[in-house]
Image 1 (cartoon, rainbow, N blue to C red):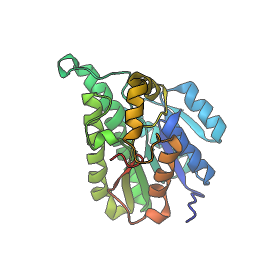
Image 2 (image 1 turned 135 degrees about the horizontal axis):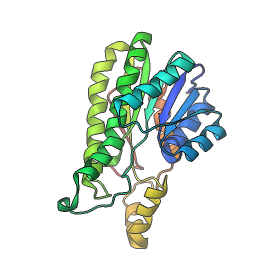
Image 3 (image 1 turned 30 degrees about the horizontal axis):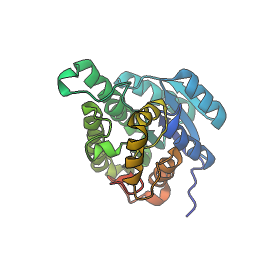
Length: 251
């Protein structure tokens, strides 16, 4: 099966590093015209230069910012075919007892992991509906299917919410030729936050984690990119509302 995206226009968020960057690279290699978005101005610019893509610096936790980004891409390209919501993360937080969680901590994680995906999907919907075509992939997490290894209540809750959003939008957008799916990665050492988490387990904890994975290895950003490209492809036109665990069998 050959997957190509010639003449397709893609937007990938969280693309300054890690999983988002790997998905953007795979799309560019497969012929798509790719736009990258991230809060990290230097990182997203470097990724865009390396991939021959367009960079956008944006905090997408508000409807206004999401609409501005989509409108900018539509003005430049005349279309938006593929949307990958890969932005997210723990926003520097660590697992703590629920009594210690502030409202701002809770809302920051939801804004990064759920709000941006909702607002970007909302902003992209009119153009995709008019075209009668669209592919949306939300990068969720194993934490959206079970308790999170991070121990962060907001992160597990937000990723569960992203899974729910995926299924709801698949139902709503399906009649318009738009599919919505999610890839749920297992543990991937893809950015400084996951590196810190990995180090925090220590040698014994790292060994236990790997022994709990059928393939006895951690995932890579490219593992997640390969699964995402299938959902974005023409070949997945009758696949929607699905959550694919890409975790070496841990789930």
